[in-house]
Length: 300
Image (cartoon, rainbow, N blue to C red; front, side, top):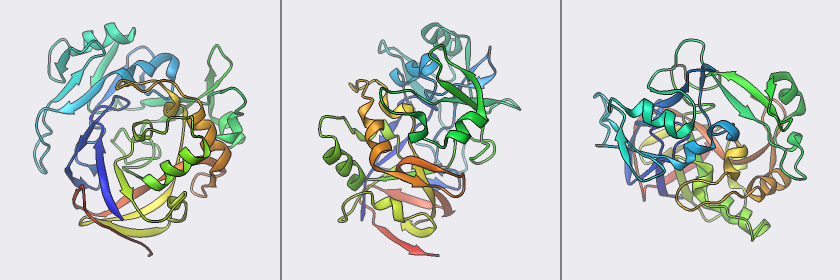
């Protein structure tokens, strides 16, 4: 297996950038999810997992003004707005400009205020019941409110499942194979399984066909000179269906297909989930580049 692309997302829920190589630390690709948009009124970290409020974030893109280097402060982030204009994360007017476009008072933050939370909607997509995405008990057990559509919205503490002090919802590293995307395209030829919908950090090419990552949780591997341990399958959410900058239109079939054909039991969280890809933890830091070999997985 080989690395065919690497992706980092400097601002949570904005489009990110594709890179040829990256340092990988215990917190994933250096500079990944370094900042987020904070909603002043609700006290939540904005996430496109609640489309009514934050789908517009996917019309923004973010990239570093320079390459991040270990042991040094991260470079400023250049944010491209939907109209093509550009502001940097250190520009005095960036919060006002973001608020104007998003229609809510927001701040760009690099550290979540104590007690901050984020929300996730459980979508009603045509004939796709919400319990095809996640266990019904979890949905009802964590429902904080409901959208006007009646859809349940869960609220979770920021980094409750990820590394403390980060903006990762679940894990610092997300790996996806072309084999999984190819299988989904076979199952639903008219749907759009563009890799950008799934926001992976590492995309691999391998000889095996199908949902190969399903067998990886609990194993270890090396990518470049980075050691990782695969933890659990990647649960998919409403974000995969949304329109976003770069020409991707709304496509509910992308999520419906995963829910129909690849539901995986995740013991760490409980229940059976609609999954594509796999999460990983970093065992030893290093560097990874496009073209590097993926060795493993092997049982620890």
